[in-house]
Length: 276
Image 1 (cartoon, one colour):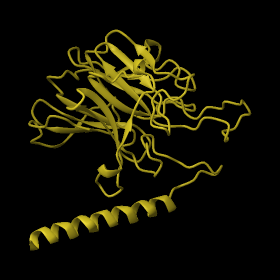
Image 2: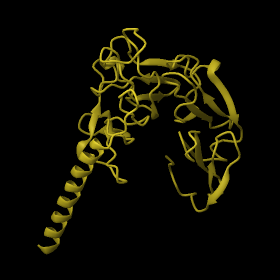
Image 3: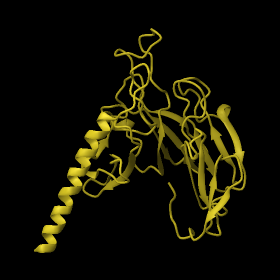
Image 4: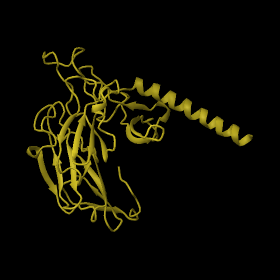
């Protein structure tokens, strides 16, 4: 009985801490000079922290469901505040049987709908978007505050490509070019070992995923030589994408820039199955 009361008390303290922490985060949100709130590229809840997106099979329905798992700001997740990402139209539910989902950031950026040169209440605010890879298809799903990935009639999910994506592992480097969006994709060819950067060719994400915006930035990245890898938008505080990989020897390597050579920083990572 005493152990049970102790566990209940600990759970209550954790809940109160998270509630208080969320209130503090709301008060401490950073604002840009023009008054618009600044959100990290993968903040789906508007609290200033990047969140986790998960894809899980629902055993009751046999369908794959997308969830936003909020960051609690203290190294954990507010599972109780999770919310589902959905599609109004079943034809836009491209994540059924997906091989990879990627919280890529805000691809198109805020959109000046009324054309007055400023983002105001009549325009469309920026919001994180999602990439879905299923076989050789790569889909871009535009996020919205409603949680529906086809909220806007003029922005249904876009098929970025329908060939060659099955053999690629994708990562999100964040903003790689100028413009309202500027979000890119890093892709590694598991068999050939090429590492590519896909940048948009237009200011609002146009051309993302096309050969016109593709640059080879590395070789030797086969699944055998580098079983695991990941990329983050800013690894050293210099606003340049970098990342980590696990070598076939089990060494963990760091990359201040993804086009450069890796530096071994640890060993014993051979048994790991993912790196994010």
